[in-house]
Image (cartoon, rainbow, N blue to C red; front, top):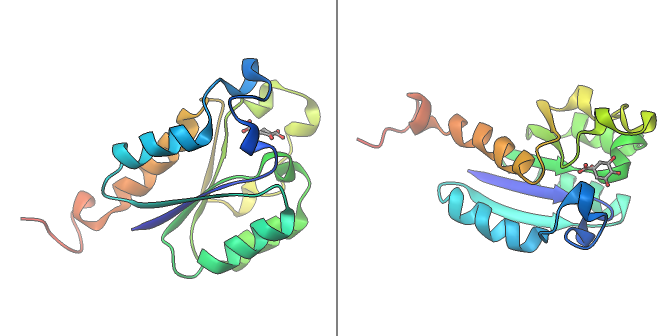
Length: 151
Ligand code: DQA
């Protein structure tokens, strides 16, 4: 099961940026932990500060991967283009946020993407990504009793 974790603007600064909100760990280190925690998922990771690059990545994987975990950063609150891309592709997208966006400034309460996503996870720190991957892991056919059987 191919799953992409897609991070948007400023998330390359995790571990450096506003540590009281986003924590002290870099995403690269956390991604290694996720790969160990979910050996049954084929995980890949991409980050860009550019809206067009995020769109290109959604188009690239959106018809062949089984799921996308998307933290679009500030584009969450502004991007019609990303919302159109999520609508266009076939892979289910889970919107994640490290911080609880609803406990922050009013402009962060609005998501342009949420309506087209499978669901949203916000406020659990980096664990927001792990919770999203748990959803995809449970979808694996052999875990929920249909499709391929392991025994
Ligand atoms: C964020 C929340 C956004 O409002 C913000 O612009 C980010 C990070 C989060 O993960 O909490 O860049 O998506």
